[in-house]
Length: 398
Ligand SMILES: Cc1cc2nc3c(=O)[nH]c(=O)nc-3n(C[C@H](O)[C@H](O)[C@H](O)COP(=O)(O)OP(=O)(O)OC[C@H]3O[C@@H](n4cnc5c(N)ncnc54)[C@H](O)[C@@H]3O)c2cc1C
Image 1: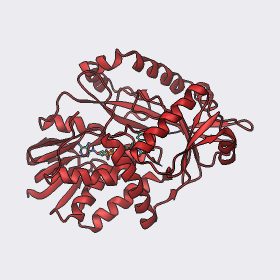
Image 2 (image 1 turned 90 degrees about the vertical axis):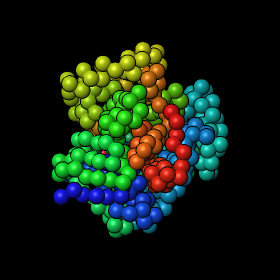
Image 3 (image 1 turned 180 degrees about the vertical axis):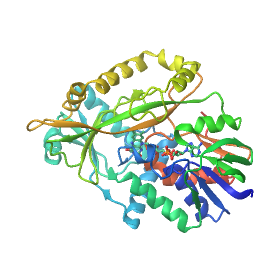
Image 4 (image 1 turned 60 degrees about the horizontal axis):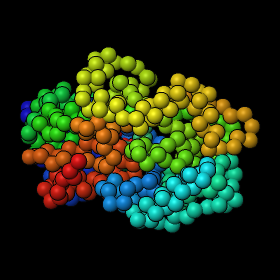
């Protein structure tokens, strides 16, 4: 029997679930979430650093900056209300020399322009009072930075969506999409409007529907190590390289008490190659894209690739990188922890797209670059996506 819904959402990650919840809050009709995995949180939304970012490294005026600052406030409020494990411990970005001290000043200006509350530059003494093992000449403190259990956050958002009437179909892979109709393993489904929140596969779904075939998702794996032997209490970040949409390496004490360091940013030849697999068919497809070769030709990208390949291949290099941020009081032990894969959008000139991207087509809306801090932004961004899906907001042009 043909199923008919008002809104079909492809992907039950944090973005799809937040959008479903928002549509249900607005009583927009029958909403269904189609998720190919048997459980939630198998991809980016369950494999990230768990940081509710305050917005310090976002570009003033960007959609991401607005969504991050507002999303951070809403995510912390949501977690407190729903009892999701949350540590409101603040974020420190350390400067390891004079050049990075100037970068902190720049981050302070950017953060203030974005409306990030209560930012402050700390002297090395003040930094040591908060985090005695942090290494640096100064630090930027963002007191609203927090750490959440990402899977529990996602489950709580999905639970609230279900309570509002959203139907979840797990283990339901969408293999074909066109205007008003989806084909799943369970058969076809008709939808008044389709919202594409397929994360690492969002460009493929968009292309099936004739939307932005010029854009490609290129996957970047982020590898984490679990560290023992350090007393880090909160979060310590290196000053980011603002040319890239990725944050640098950082140490995060999770809500479970474990200390993780990472993630790296390594080019991955498979969209779900968490164990460093090399799926030949996918790799050949990626190597045939002009977007890939244009990206690969940039000198900045080559520098990033070299640095990250070293830390991916050598635990000693990973540890050396970590020790530029921290003074270890004794021997430290690193063991491989989870990996996540960033769904990084690349445009036809080979540029890594920095901002969140939303494309609106006839009876469909596509979220195409939900990179970090997408989890932080999710509840605010869901409002923006719901406006677009309901036809009241302009789409964001890339
Ligand atoms: C290493 C790493 C660290 C990060 N750290 C942070 C952080 O600390 N803070 C922060 O705010 N953000 C962070 N992010 C970003 C954040 O995780 C993402 O922005 C967010 O999870 C994106 O959510 P999503 O729902 O778009 O993607 P996903 O969680 O990947 O969800 C997409 C879902 O779509 C499903 N799907 C795909 N194709 C189909 C199909 N054809 N049919 C049915 N279902 C389909 C997938 O199974 C998946 O569950 C990080 C990301 C990574 C990779």
